Length: 213
Image (cartoon, rainbow, N blue to C red; front, top):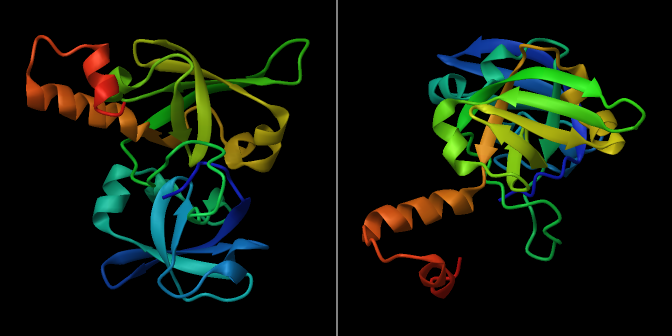
C-alpha cells in the first residue's frame, strides 16, 4: 500500500526489450539505496517489483498487461517518473490509500499558473468510465500523486497544484496531451460493489455507515 506522497523523482536511463518483457531502468538519489531485490516500488503510480538494484538505480520489468493498462509504455530515456516506497505500519497516512493499481490512463489538457497566485491549475481528461468514482473535494491519484479534485465536469477534472507538488514531482515535465496514470479512491469502488451486491432499494447513508463507510 502507498499513500501518494512522492519521495523523489527519478529519471529513466534505459528502456529495453528483454525476454518478451520491457525492462526500464531508473536512476534516483535516495530510493534505490532503500530497495532490496523483489521489493515493491511505485513508479508514477504503478506498483512494480525492483530488480537489478544498485546504490543509485534500479530496474523493473513491465508485463504486457502493465503496458496496456498504464502510461508506462510511453516512457523514454530521460523521462521523469515519480517514486514512492510502500507505507510502513508505523507511518502516518498523509495522503490517501493508494494501491498502485492503475484504473485507467488520462490525458493532461493543461497545467497553467493561476494568475496572481503561486498555485497551478491542472486539467485532465479522464476515461469516461471512471467519472462516477470521482467527486469534488475527493481524493484521486495522478501519476502516483495523492491530489484533491477541485471540480469535475463530465470526463474533465480540475485540480489545484501547490508550488511544492509542482516542483517536487514530474508534473512540471509533462506537456499538454501527455498520458497520465489515474487511480481512483479504492473506497468508492468498495461502496459500489456493496450497493450492487445487496441490490436493495432501501440502502441509504445510515446503512453504509453501519457497514463502516
